Amino acid sequence: MAVQCWVSICLGILFLRGAFSKSIINGTSAENRLDTLEKRINVFEKQMENITDLLINFPLHPVPHSQRPLFYIELSNDVTLNKNSIVKFDVTRVDVGDNFNTGDGIFIAPRSGIYLFSWTVKMFSGKNTHTELRVDNVVKGRQIVALGSVGHLATTRNVLTNVKHGDHVWIQTGPYYTENIFDETQNVVSSFMGIFLQEN
Image (spheres, rainbow, N blue to C red):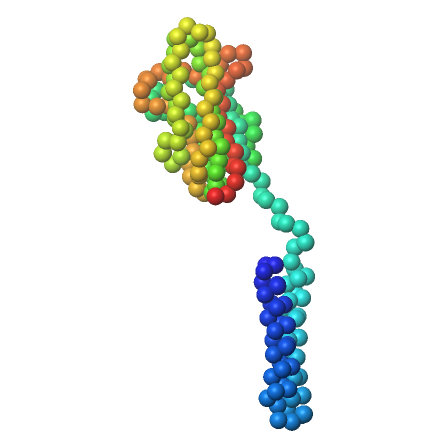
């Protein structure tokens, strides 16, 4: 918009200068020169009105960014999932924009851009868990935890990735283990987080 304003102003000034010079050089009489000049001035005044309208409506401050989509969702209880199963995180802590569906565990991206996703898997000794971050069913990150006798452990994986508007994003178990354990102990649970960082 600002560029359009300046272009219009510059063109208007050049047009006015051309009106004066052409009317003086090409006119054959004072009356002809005056008539030509009046027509040019009328056109110039119209252009100035358009420029004035643009400047009046031009915002003085930058338009604020819309809210950044972000979510943080937890699992409410112990969960054991077979391989290739979506993890249905079901407790909403934060969901700016209401883009995460706790019914199916899927986030639908409202904006295209770069997102940061992070998921934490809480498990206990002697168990294995393999998880994947998927964007429209394409694997963008993996996490495998295979514990010996070390008690309880929570591990986190972070992924930066491009996401398109309308893409579906979720965490699911991998193809290796038929029993993927997600443990809950003393309110320490598995979780899934995502935040929009910037446009591409």
